[in-house]
Length: 561
Image (cartoon, rainbow, N blue to C red):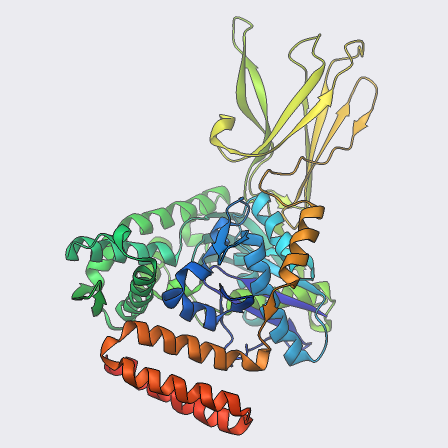
């Protein structure tokens, strides 16, 4: 069985194309959104809602927003164990797959996973590694805006049209310009910012709070900072819903109040909104279009609920964005449709999906000045950004010296003429025979596929020898042996049975409420003791009844506080 997965920074979803359309699966709590949070409780791993509750009570054992570190060698330490971003993502994937298998009644073996359009080669390889660590084969990576447009285009549009998709998630912002015609979804341009998302808007509120209340966030204990972030997230949502909001919180045994208006929030976020403008303008410029050429604008991602985002899109593009598919679900639904395409679903037989390379890919070269002197470190593009993929392009190069024994070729992605300002993907070392003769040139061929993976080939034109060299892996990437070692370590972790997760999450929530609301600790402690006692009875009906009552009591307590 093949599924579609939206592996998000803050939340993740999973679904399948069942022949009638995309269908998303709820987790053990009955929710479609699973928080992308992982926590350790002894030798047991918690994922989702229970883990998110422990961000406050056990921040040293809990990790979140790790998608932002994908493709790096960053490690999170949880309870003495060290986890790479791929491993934490794999634990989220395992939880999603368990939910899908529970709903389907069969094993999931393959997946189409969405990634930000601006994810680099290293980040895409890390996402594939996460799939391997989770025990599935990643059949395809699909760009998130393309997935969203796929959901909108196939379900709702008739005839031709140009659609601009703006995807503002928890950690990334992506822009894709697509054309829909005769069953074809063709990407014309893609741009974005992998370090711009809802978390950054949250950060400006935190900094404003710190300035107004003279709070040094760096001096707050981890649990206090986690609690502040959690309450500030609810505060931010209130600003989007009500316009103005007031925060009451107790930090370091001091009661604090803070208020903010929607107007001030938009002023604080002005630099972030300016950063959003740049990829939008770049995508239009690359596609050689103006705002009047766009037929529809689609907003997806949880952070687009902020009214300022809709206003920005309307001002820039001169039209109201479409919102009739849930912004949190559009990417996941598109991923399920892409999975249906791979699975040859009957109702998708006539659909063709194309994508583009979001970055310029090239090599480092030396330039010769008018005096014949060589200056190294310049960027030679091989595949320009926004080229339709799959694509294969080549460039001819020559050694700097006739006596050169090795041709060293650095592979880069980026848009700067100087290579050190671009992202290094790897380096290839090609032996050169000094007696080779010929015209002295080599052909460098780049092949970029629909999954964003790059293959580099070098051909010696003097003798026709082709060097089928695999791009040396990035230092931050896991090789096959490392994946197998880490897979064994992950499998050794215990996972709560799926049917027990609502109880685990409720107890984690109670512990968080106990830590936050000092005036009600006796009540919370009594409720928690009673619920633990009920769990020991193993009476399913009684546990369900007590869980509902406990949840209602916590809801009431938090609503009053």
